[in-house]
Image 1 (cartoon, rainbow, N blue to C red):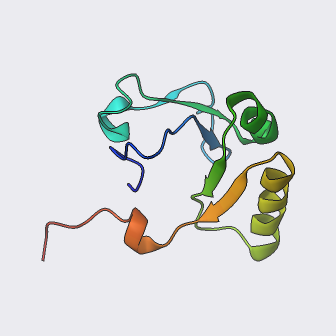
Image 2 (cartoon, rainbow, N blue to C red; image 1 turned 180 degrees about the vertical axis):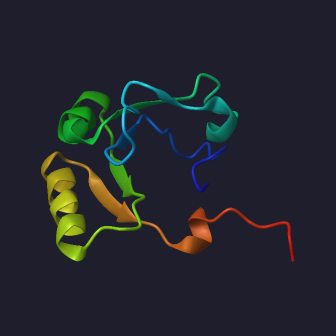
Length: 101
């Protein structure tokens, strides 16, 4: 949600590991927002370090909710070793606002 229609950032890719057969697909344009009319490519998470170097990504945001501390810090170390910042975002920046009260 934070990056949708936010011209201060360019989302270069998503990675996935938990959803079977999602690699090679696209995050849909209807969800990505007006800045990504063709959607956003989804890559296997195992290619993350290579992807950071290939795209010049400056920041990686972790969007999992079910990882233990050791796994999160391992991912952070891999991202930093590839030259990008690692970021965790809180609910206030990522949640979808409910219209129901």
